Length: 83
Image 1 (tube, helix red, strand yellow):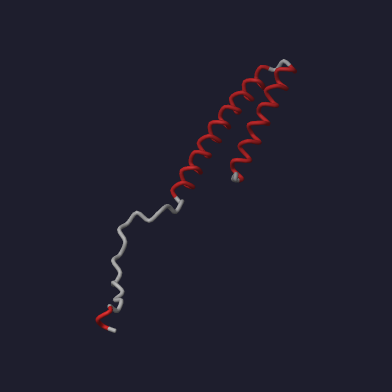
Image 2 (image 1 turned 120 degrees about the vertical axis):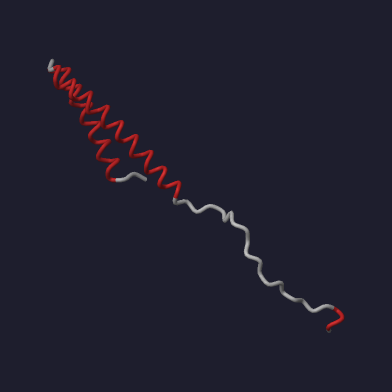
């Protein structure tokens, strides 16, 4: 499950790689520099966002109840003498 922000960052990373390759083919070193820098920034932001969403998801999991059970009243079953 991905969020819309993760999809956008992944799109930015792919677009910046395409821009870097295009800049290399065209011989434009500035476009290559901008493409590579934006790729690494997008990947770093994507990693941070995925880590944060993982931490939030794990903190919202409902695990086993680790608290001591509340003592309930004992049910009184009739014994042979009380019948």
